[in-house]
Image (cartoon, rainbow, N blue to C red; front, side):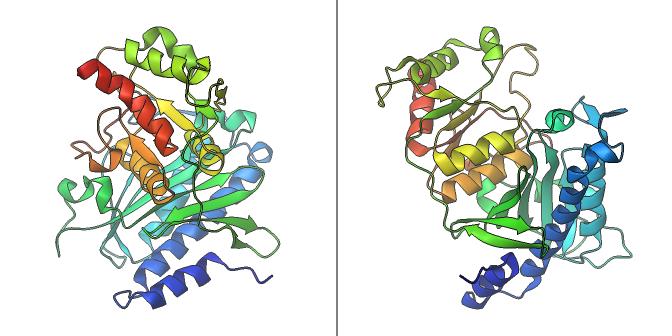
Length: 336
């Protein structure tokens, strides 16, 4: 059977849309090239001294890992020169990343997590790059923060690259979700998972139960529901937690289930956890909804949240639609 590349599929969709200009297709192709370079570096990380910490601390107050820094630099370098962006925002950078004046500018904004799951890098667990693309809302001038702080509903594309036993790209432009696997022999992402659809209800829950003592009562009740056998499946869900969001999400997207990163109260000043709304929750919410699933912060649909900060954090319940609905119901019961 003839296999379809990402570029071929993008061009087919472009042909079907009379408003398409080809610039968006070029943008995704540049991002794909950056991901191929990151994948290459990930695959040889243990051989070229890019494991471990750099000694720096990022804007989130987290220790920066060498490979995390390298991936961030690769993506910024490639995408600044693409001539299709007007700005970028990365989990690793405190402020908006501007496009230098010597490079051509476009009307898209890229938000990304260069290497999700970086704490797992040194033990060879699957990690990934998460991305979100929005259009700027002003016609000219320097990009302002208001243009970057857009609701998830405004995304024109989102997805992720996962670097595991194989390297995959999963993405949506609002017309379903498709997965492509990198064939290293030809250097192309080939369609391997067309029209991904997540089951309405799964058999797996993914959460770090080590934080049990820091959770509120609704969170404990929700987790107990999935693990107790009192759920609609009439038997316990299996706990599967990797600790790498993109890996846990990818497994559940294909097989069904729910990933939960609820509020916890280890630090009363920071109850919202570590996940970022703009570069993690929003893009994965777009993907899962296009696959028939759901994403919530426990109260609101993730895609409807109006962001107020570049590095805003959020609780996240994401996965099979019925499982997310059930988890959220425990919080609604409390507020009723």
